[in-house]
Image 1 (cartoon, rainbow, N blue to C red):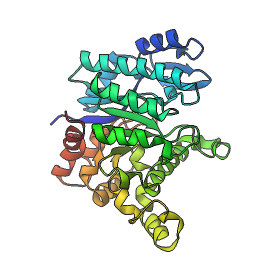
Image 2 (image 1 turned 180 degrees about the horizontal axis):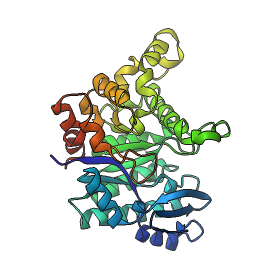
Image 3 (image 1 turned 30 degrees about the horizontal axis):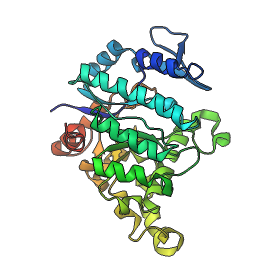
Length: 329
């Protein structure tokens, strides 16, 4: 059994160099580099620290071996989504990153597979880049942000993307970015502790109540960080649908039916919470994830699953079995 981590970010020096050639004013650039990492700047976005494993493959491979991770499903760092730029520029930067991801997979096929990044502010262009990434570059799907400059993912403009993703059997990882309520989340690192799972919850709930999963029942959508708060509020969603008219505008059956179509990564940092998700939604809807290389990740993700109070069959499904099926590895 090979362990497969579906949530692992990368931004190599080669990716950064090619992106700077396309958009010097955006970067990305590294500074204050030492043995542990550095400071990443992408336009006005600053990531401090940016761990060295984010760009240094030797460090990454060592961490994978130490953590018992055999393969990573590479995705770009959310700092490079760049949905606020001109769509053509974002598209060019996405194309560069996707080509570099494909090159890594080609060079290290036993270590990596990958999913694309897309210019989501232009859904037609995003659908076209998804098709190119999967049919020409060999990528397995895409990672997209939890909203597109304030536009929720059920917006009708995104229908071309969802139709294309369903047609191609794309694996879609939804990742939080530009979190809601930033002014109230300034202290205590709440922007991540609360903001990130809140973003995932809003994104997923929009897809549910917007009827996207009803219209496209074969979509393969994985929610970051264990689905945020959504798995634990399924009953509240059902109750609201029963007693209020607002939820029935685009949804015809109870929200739980759509929620059960999602996949959830294992990044919950709490065994009872992970056990709840496995017991409630099934091991075949839970995928190993680390959020490598960031400090809020779950770099011992394999050990966390091995220690989970569940059956050996469920552990095998979470560690690799379902990912092999979804990604057609």
